[in-house]
Amino acid sequence: MKQYVLRRLALAVPTLFLVSVIVFALMRLMPGDVATRMVEGHGYARTLDALRHDLGLDRPVHVQYVEWIGNIVLHGDFGRSYWTRQPILEEFVRRFPVTLELALLTILVSVVIGVIVGVLSAVRQDSVSDYVGRVLAILALSIPYFGLAVVVVVVPSIYFKWTPVWTYAAFTVDPLQNLKIMLIPALVFGVTRAGPIMRIMRSALLDVLRQEYIRTAWSKGLSERTIILRHALKNALIPVISLVGLQMPLYIGGSVIIESIFRLPGVGLFFFEALGKLDYPVVQSVNLIIAAMVVGLNLAIDLSYAFLDPRIRYR
Amino acid sequence: MSIATPPIDAALPARVAPPRSRPWYLDVWIQMVRRKPLGTVGAVIVVVMLAAAVFADQISPYGFAETSLRERFIAVNGAHWLGTDQLGRDLLTRLIHGARVSLYVGFGAVGLGSVLASAIGILSAYFGGRVDMLVQRGVDAWMAFPPLLLLMSIMSLVGPSAFNITIVLGAAFGIQNSRVVRGVALGIKEHTYIESARAMGSGHLAIATRHILPNTLPTIIVVATTGLSTVILTEASLSFLGLGVPPPFPTWGGMLSLAGLDHMYTAPGLAVWPAVALSLAVFGFNMLGDALRDLLDPRLKGG
Image (cartoon, rainbow over all chains, first blue to last red; front, top):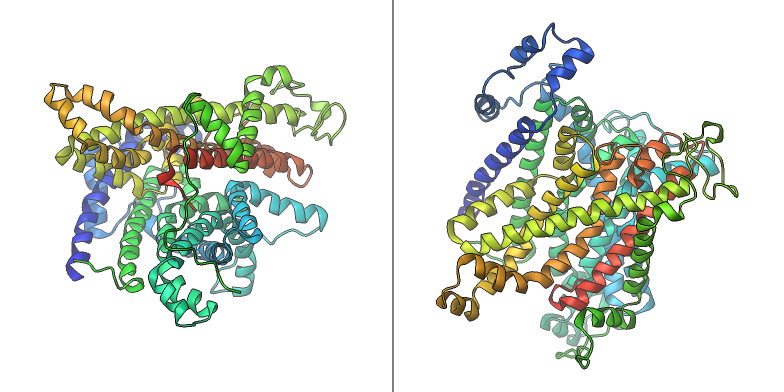
């Protein structure tokens, strides 16, 4: 087990190295010049060359890359924003709780809906409720979450004269106000992500219910409730967990849009604003941090299988 | 009440092959209408959308960029069936032309992506060893990014345009799905007929294109049809953020944010209709893709 963890960690290093190369190369090789915009639009320096020199953009690309990655690896320094000169990591850490809370609530909503509908659908296979559940799952999958978000904001305000609260409050400051604000975005986003979870829950449970040990459980005379909840569900949840893990990038990517619609001061909004200003260091570092999180999360999920399914052994 | 536990040899519906008098591509559609009602609904939606895209100029009542400042925010009336937007442009016209943009980007990106996915996947599987190792680590790294963040980064650098977004989405689609193609190609590579082709003196290129590629085609078709809805949705997300197809071209995602979000209290229809159109399109492609997958490649059957 320990060896397996170490080997997986060692394999993550080259992946993260490639990730950093990809994101850096994209930022520098693509057209789009931050210096021109900073000088012409905002007068950050007297001349273009002076600004490029200040930002270190006049040096060869590989030198810039080594400096960027070197500071991260050696000092944990993710650089500063070109525009505000604020340290990126500080801003990221300050905003991350908002995004994390949104992601967790979204996952909670989608897993609760997906698992309940999926179990009902599998247990009553080919019944009316099965078909209704499956069609609902596909419908939910088809509705773009940003479309649903806009509609959810529009409809109540027109017909019920009720507008959602927009002023954000941190959970630690005002938990109730915070939940009030987070609930609608999480519901909107969660509902549209419940479809795949429901589908995989249904097929995994159907699969498990056909296995021998479930037949044994039936013949022992256990109740349906016990068999499904205590015997079948635990094994059927494994694919659900790996799906949630695989979809983590989608949750994070979607949070950018959700945060910009609902004006939540999270990492997504930070990233989106940096993009608009071509703030390379921010875009680069945020991409890298999030990719590193995804890699770490995938590892954690692989390891969690060992606890859920004792048959899986790592060597 | 007990759940139905099927017998051990759960009787699968016998897949009796119909007499092969008609070609397979016709047969697929006939099977679909008979056995897949939802897939048929999806196909109808897709056909309507295709027709709207192709004949947009003929069927839409106005020009898509035809503004009329005197007629801003008109509610539904006889001249404007779905009303007008903040610049007095006819909403129905823009929805119809939006189908054209969606499909242009969708088919373009998926077509490009499928070629790329086959090339990368087959190359990686065929040569194996060090090449495979290198290519797969690259794909790993690419897949570590949340797709939307990476696509947003690239689009903000290259600048929004229909051409750019098609290329970028196509590249992303290709890299991601090369995994699937590689998996299938790895299996095909082990067959003896590949070995005999090599023994008869076929070169690498000939084996890859004449023997491996045709056998991966069903998988590629399935990947492409199921991928269309995702690509259309991604294009809409990017256009929603202002990083996709720029104005004045009407895109459903762009209409949602530019007309919809900014004026949602004065004219809710501007937000609701593009959302409905987009949902319908994605639903149609999803259903069609699912049905085609079941009919073409039963191994990939999902829940």
